[in-house]
Length: 389
Ligand SMILES: NC(=O)c1ccc[n+]([C@@H]2O[C@H](COP(=O)([O-])OP(=O)(O)OC[C@H]3O[C@@H](n4cnc5c(N)ncnc54)[C@H](O)[C@@H]3O)[C@@H](O)[C@H]2O)c1
Ligand SMILES: [Zn+2]
Ligand SMILES: [Zn+2]
Image (cartoon, rainbow, N blue to C red; front, side, top):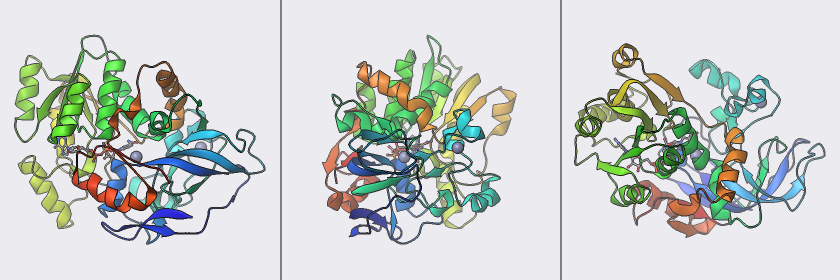
């Protein structure tokens, strides 16, 4: 089959690789009808996530048709049309039973390696380094889905692939980010990053009752799309973000702040962003947490800082003094997609949201390597790429 494979920094190729096979009784094989490139894939593309091996198959936003089912799988049948969560979860362990699927303690066969770095291991993920399981990803013609009687969810024929594909990741992620904010009527939610995740967070914050959303980025078409969703938009290259948020909130700060940027914050945003960049480049630091610092400073007393932008290591100069003295709550995580998927499918079916509004580029798998570049460089108005193998 054809698949998009990783070969080093900025080197993604469309290659012929062996077809996946059923390995365990609960597995299924999916013929991929649509897959997407995520901002998290850019961390691999940019070579900042460790333990990628040459030839690893990329991708964790995938849907398609079931073409083979393992002998112990009682949930799926050949021909089912399903969306596949990016988090791999057994459904039975301590964490899965509590709905914390992205904390599954069985799905990462390389958990011992991660324990050394993070104290313990989260779930395995599709197409996301050997640290998180080394599972082949779904930017391919076929995908092997482990524990396929837990993750994949059948979707109704009336909805198009583009309407349901983002249930695999960015819609639940943006929704979780907003849900973490514990939104009450009248609330102002500030959101850093108007990439696909930020866009989903903006719509979700309104769905959950926010009165105002302040959306921050510098890319014109991303700010424009945020504006179309009803957000007040701020360009961080144009305005002092802290001063403007204070002006907009009577000097108090936003009720909750969402970091939908993570470790690859734009190094030109401020002096601390530039220092972060130098520290990472010289191995003096692991991450570039400018957005997290700013989100803390801009949050009102006893507000929530909701973090879905991904960080990898040990973050420097986080203003914990501000956070503890002013009673902030931190919530964060890789999304337990299985927990949110049924609820959000319902919201799509009810017409409350159509997540396909973020799609700007549609292409074949063969064009994938070029589109990685376009998405990374934010060229050609690119916000979200959907590939159809
Ligand atoms: N927690 C999860 O489960 C989960 C799931 C999906 C994605 N993610 C993470 O969410 C983040 C965003 O993903 P995406 O697909 O939207 O990626 P993206 O790279 O397309 O978007 C990031 C946006 O942040 C903007 N940005 C950069 N510096 C900024 C700053 N200082 N202030 C405000 N905006 C700034 C960029 O211009 C860009 O538009 C990534 O870190 C990704 O890994 C997390
Ligand atoms: Zn993702
Ligand atoms: Zn589990």
